[in-house]
Length: 354
Ligand code: SAH
Image 1: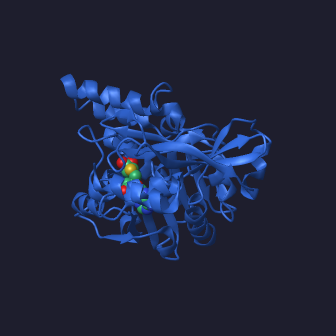
Image 2 (image 1 turned 180 degrees about the vertical axis):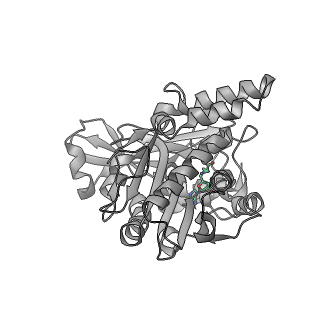
Image 3 (image 1 turned 90 degrees about the horizontal axis):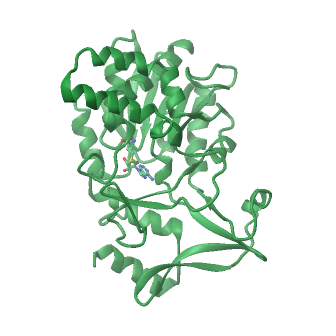
């Protein structure tokens, strides 16, 4: 048994069943045994693959989207170019390469990465060695200046709580022990005033999820975007108001039991974009747009055609497959959604609707 499961079992023996957000935070970010703190989970050899790791085109079109937004806001002479949860730094590297020729953009940009994992910070340092980069522990610490930010598959890693509606009220789903194994159970009915709006769209037996960490992160970003200018692009899997159990674990690209081997698999939940929208003030938010539609509007297919001319054989086949994987509705094109925050009295970033 890994040390992390021992630690979690000891906590449950001492304090009783553990909330899912505590379990998730412990598994992902425990300082010495957490999933993210100890490894690089990305890529074909890892547990999951993300859009920037599939093709450079993803970061290139995002870079041009951010640069176009910067230009249409009057090219502020100093701004933060930030990423939440930058993984290997691939997306930021592609953004920087694609915006290299945008006059004035480089000189004005201060690159800021918000990353909790020391192991991934090391990899980001290597990927972005050609650039001056600052690391921050949270979005609150970002400078007070215009902010152009991207978050791809960051919000899905934030811990969630789960509640099941019973005939007498909400019961929280928890991790407990049975026969010396971790197991899911339900806590007692307790008042949950924050869930009052979910009484409209749920019935007895339904399960809902709630991510409390979205609000502080989004407030810090929205305040800067609304006050100083900028935009924040959030890309993730999820939908407007999620319903049902989306808590999942991925290991070696396979779905596994989230309780089976704590700290050894990636734990995520779908992102509730309604929650993001409700915490966007004082910034405005765009409509939620499928990733495939967003990338097409930004010209990913033209970019794919240009790149295709330089390729042949198996690299051309891989390139065509990557374009399809990012955009096609049966692959990532529809499952992943995009929403942006932008300042009042401005137009939304290209590719998105107000
Ligand atoms: N955006 C990257 C990586 C996504 S994986 C890509 O698209 O490839 C999730 C990333 O968020 C990892 O870098 C992980 O270490 C980071 N992360 C997860 N929880 C975090 C938290 N609470 N604060 C800061 N970073 C976090």
